[in-house]
Image (cartoon, rainbow, N blue to C red; front, side):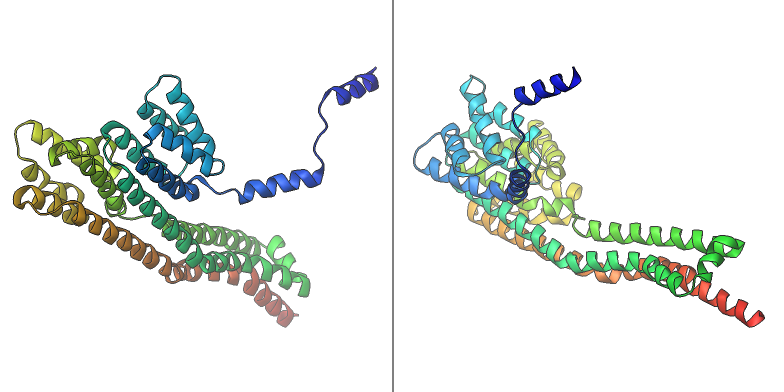
Length: 361
């Protein structure tokens, strides 16, 4: 009976793909571009559609057909949700919450602002695409610069165990010393613990090299792109600050919200903006100086903001390169304090104990 049931189940179920097909599918998924890698191309496709006179919803739909999965699926869902009667802004916000990616929040904020404000969003989307492309390049450069450090950390962490195995093969009495005597067991436990701590320490150093220590400076280019979009839509500075505050990155959002509150209480926009560097630090000063100078002295704002966005991208790249180049120097601390003592306890101590035992005999 069981054999009959299994035969019927095999006939009803679709045949499983051959092993070679599964390998090809897995390789295709591995080669599939990530959302962050495809976002700049998608935003530029949307900008081209907007320049041709298409609406934002149509531009998103056309961009979804020009990029591959997984981004194409999310963009197609945005247009499908909007076609069922929901607003484009709600559809974009829903896509942002359900999609993983470092650049998704900025892209969603730019698209949502473009949908809310209208105007000429094509130029601003090109600027956001440049920011995201530069961010991807910085991440690739960090990985390339830290590859040697990662390989060195792995080799250094494995070295005590590898040499211990070689010593055990050359002198089996060293294994007896490590597992039979009290001092040997202490050397074994402390050596393994030190090596594990050293490996964790080195991994932490390499991982933190890719993180941004100054989130305000890292998000400056993103915030400038949103200001360019809002001002390009025809908003004055007061309305632009209010619009950007709702969509700004985390590091800037709270400070801009406080600016909006002070303006609502009757304070001038330029005077309210003067307090932003006190909240965010010196990284916000160039942007605030450009915004307040435009209101007080009538200086051209959009060209200044575009130049500041370029400077912010270059500064982020420079800081990322500096952090990656400091990794080999920082690895010296776990090497000297953890790995080398573990190496001595696991390899040198058994050899010395064997030599002392031989002299006694």
